[in-house]
Image 1 (cartoon, rainbow, N blue to C red):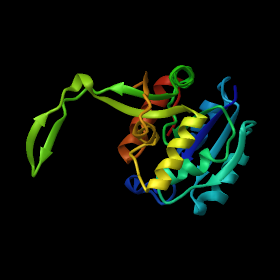
Image 2 (tube, rainbow, N blue to C red; image 1 turned 90 degrees about the vertical axis):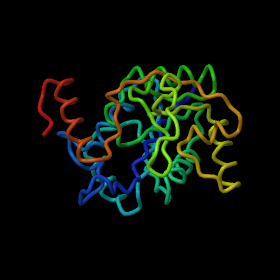
Image 3 (cartoon, rainbow, N blue to C red; image 1 turned 90 degrees about the horizontal axis):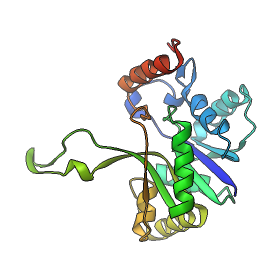
Image 4 (tube, rainbow, N blue to C red; image 1 turned 30 degrees about the horizontal axis):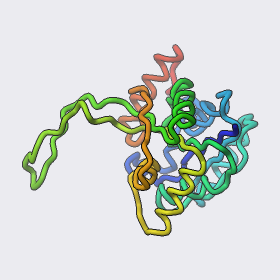
Length: 229
């Protein structure tokens, strides 16, 4: 069995309000490097493909070159949307299992990666997720329409892991139909495949805003007994 981790680092990061790609911001090391290391150090991952913006290609390549990574096979230029970037990465691999992960989730754990691969092997498709904690209201015109059943709601994270034939078929079909989903799993769901939920960790946050960066620094400090300012 061959497994490929596709790390998506081609987002525009508008909500971070930084003068550079948020994945190049540092938690002692660039966020992207922490994310890559999680997969580089995992025994079940055979290769890594990093997907970046064209304008960040040179900077990203230099940052990666400063670190010793044996599993990175290629740096791929992404598309205009996350879905297009994911497609570009997927089509670069001939692996049996493909994991798709947000570059902005550097706190992903070893067991989340392991369990997502295990579930994808058993069920074909797997999404790391956590149960929703808060009560959610469906709203229209600033008034509550109804309150959703929290017990049935989960917050999707990454990695999202699939047997290669399933995710490639899902992306190719979506591209043919002009369909854009919220994530890779939604493309698979659209074809009628069942997607297994894999319990994740609440600390596996996606660093999207300046507040997220502050939280991530505190988590890194707690986990490593060190300051990442």
